[in-house]
Length: 482
Image 1 (tube, rainbow, N blue to C red):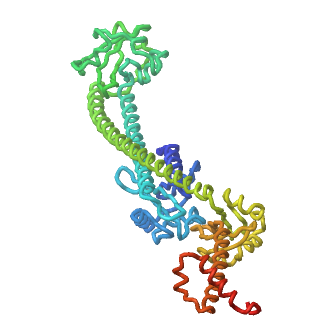
Image 2 (spheres, helix red, strand yellow):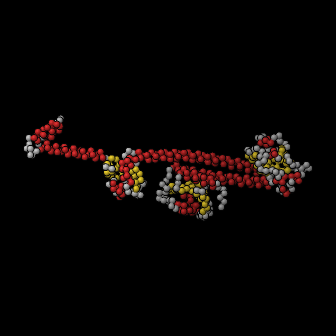
Image 3 (cartoon, helix red, strand yellow):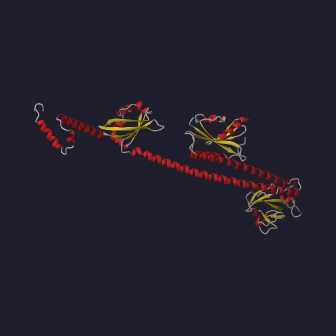
């Protein structure tokens, strides 16, 4: 199978560019041929020998319509089983973008696997844009190949009909020439200047043939600067920068065939007039086709440039979103570290203390180095409680201080984060309030025993008066009872 019509390096470059910006788990391109599949995967170029049946082609078209698949698909092509092994799961998203030829027929697919479900619309559009660029690249190469084949066929036809032809560019450089000059002027080579070897006989200037008013059917003559040779020709424009000279050597009494180093076998056995008319007609028709193809290539190139601009805008947007996300992650990551209260994290799956902020190190000291289960014992909790809870509260004593901690499970992680704070003063205040309440209760019991009105005592303005009254009453009682 001939794969030279595809610029594989450009295709691999598109894959690399997509991988850098979209970060898929796996991505590759399949180009489908009747008896094989060419797979471009990273720097590898693989040929899979797969014979496709009509059902396979129908499955391909159905798969192209489905485009985005999470988990699996009934239209999944069988040749994807091997690369998807170990990649596609119930949470993996496969996005397949078709690659079309110039007729709109699907000739391949651009696959991308994303392990965390369906990617964003920006990433999907980015993948579709890369697939479109690949399609345009293939179509441009196919057009270039056809254009090259037509030019080669034209040159072969011109060479067979007119072995003395010349192709001259705008700078009067020889782009190509017929086989007779290998004998007539051996030093002639592609890229040399026309005026270094020849001089026009009936032109005032070599640039005259490029003027818009030049009569193309005019018979022109030029001679060799180094040999006794004279040539006649007509000029046919192939483009704005390329002219075709249909040249024949002048053979007469002044210029013999031997002066050119040629024999009759160096010329095709055809009538010159017929060849001239044929060449003129063919050249004009080919010129029209070439202009049309150039216009088509310009249009496709403009589409490619537009796609490249869209991709660049998407790239900048994606980079901006990534930068914003990274900034947000940095801000959030600083929050536990800068918290003035002790914050620490426990990985209950790996069973170790995986994070502690500065406040935790100052509050707990060497206790943070305790083994996993001993540390949980200090917190007055156990492994089962931590592993089976989404959130919990713990009260514990460390370094002669009392702490209360609220713990929360980090989503999608086997980590419990504890936000703790020192409640030693709060406990002390509770003890003092308890003692005060106990004293008040004892005082109220004494007042009830002495038949003193609580309401009157409550509205007394001086506590000392109350104490004096209580003391007076106690002094009037029996000392032994007192």
